Structure formats: structure tokens, C-alpha cells
Length: 125
Image (cartoon, rainbow, N blue to C red; front, top):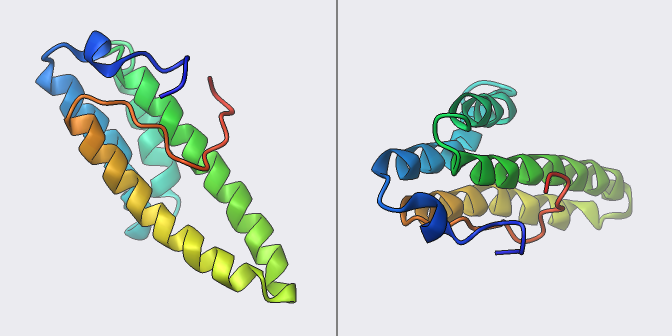
């Protein structure tokens, strides 16, 4: 965790509701596999609705939003690199990471940890 992400135990305490919503926030990225664009909209809506009653959700919302923006940028660059055959492996790797990172983030959130996704550019600090 970086300096701007507080220690999760300081934020959570034993709040099971916060842990549950943090996990749902991370896993809501998968809504995009069922409904187009829902993987971008659902996490942001959950973050905005829950960050006031559950302040620890703000940390997870920033982490997920940063990953969504970063993954979009990486996918555009990889798509452009398809013409030189470098983009195909990059798109495959990005596809795997787009599944693995939210799962790991959801598991860590359910354990009371705020896990910043590797390779995520920190647009929102």
C-alpha cells in the first residue's frame, strides 16, 4: 500500500459491512461481462453511494477507478500495437490481469486490506 492508502485495520476495525461492500466493489468489475459497460459503471456507482456511510469504501473506490482507467489505456495501446504483432500477447496478458486483479482485490478487501492493483496508474490519489 502506498502512503495515500491508510492501513486497512485502522480504517475498518471489525466492520463486516464495510468489508462486504469493499469486496462487492472490487468484484462488480465483472458486471461488464454480463452487461456492456456495467463493469465501469457499477463500481463507480457503488463507490459514490457507499463512501459517505462507509468511509473506508473511498480507498477501494479509488483503487478500482484507477484500475479501470489504467486498463482502458492499456487496452487502447495494445490494440494499436496489434498491427506490429506485439499487441496480441499484450491483450491476452491484459485479459488475464483483468480477471485476476479484481479477484485478488476482492479477497484482500474481505480480509480488511486495501490492495492497490499492480500496474495501476494512480490518477485518483
